[in-house]
Length: 115
Length: 115
Image (cartoon, rainbow over all chains, first blue to last red; front, side, top):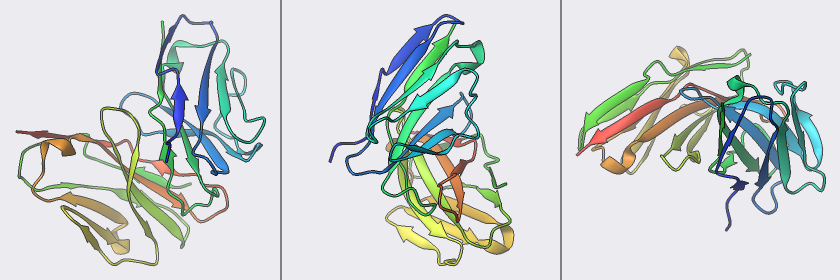
């Protein structure tokens, strides 16, 4: 069974530039999550999709971050413009139904460095 | 809101030693779920175990064991006879019982097992 796929693996940009990350969840998983993991911290949820609808984006900095999952499968997370404090690993995860007792399956993440 | 504390930032042991990783949580809900994930150097978080708040039975799986105590709000993880391959960052996480899976992670404990 294929796992959660993410690309790119690494990205280096200058502040005020834009960047996009892509995620393809496990086939059949209705729920997709984007997490931000700052060095030395645990992952923090940015946004959760159920199929192509947003369930929770309360911690997404909406002035610069946006995400979409148009066909209910793969998803794109964008940052525009990037700030130095956005340097982090961006993890995508998926689960079957999105219920609180479900384990999450994670991708390897995209490591973003903002210079 | 729920909170997870992993007071141990880094632990270093020599191979074959036993090691316990501590996790303390806070929640106002009576129904909740606790998780442990492992993050090896490759980056993806890997699910290890899940416990619901009504099941305080401790579990042993091979070299791994978990001690869940509601009285002290703790969910500790022990590796017996540690191996070099156990070196990773370990995260404890808490999810409260609601539709959307707002899983909150601790800051993680970096375990280094030396040969």
